Length: 272
Image (cartoon, rainbow, N blue to C red; front, side, top):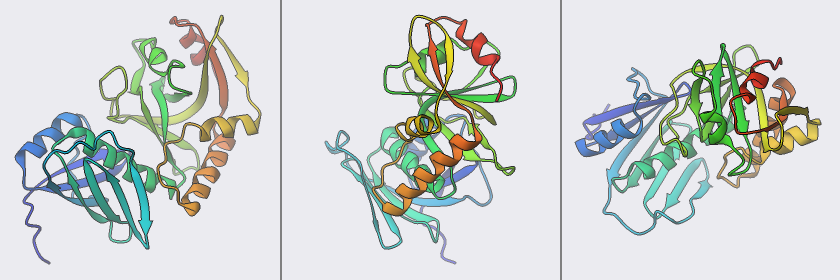
């Protein structure tokens, strides 16, 4: 086997998925170490590997990401990066500027593609663990995902205030995992996981209360917040099926709340 000429590497582990990045740049490794602090996990056999080459900065970071499939190959492109990945060999390459945000985007997209094939998902949501159970809080921007994270009691472990990682468990249930993807709190979540006990669609109102949702409302609320970039018919169907399966196994409810800590008393009293 030919030795990889990119003699440096780092392993990023998120939700049990380990991605190895090969590079010849120590500066790039330093960027990875800072951006993914708490999620650098050296492993003998990573799940996926990418050879990374650095390119000069351009002006395309604000462009929309384009994700396409050519045969079995996935191609991910924006002005500040270009990546290609073969799920069969679990290998790919990335050409990017020296920026943590470029790599951040590639890693998010790869994870969404992996999870879509196994019934999991990344969701635009905050999440936390309390008393051994995980809770996910989702909704449109500005509805209070970061606010409810700030209100969490001292004994809660914040998994993220921006991007929640949900994966099927061996027993047919679901677990929520911490991610390094931060929102307004500007700090990564804790690298922990726990059984997912409930998902709340957030709304702000004059009182703290939890309302039941119909199955249709629950699935619609999940689909509106699942992160997915590829307009691939097969995977779009998989995401739809995943939302239905998740809503059938994990309670999805409406949480209306005031911005004070008492809302967590209500959350803590919820039973699946």
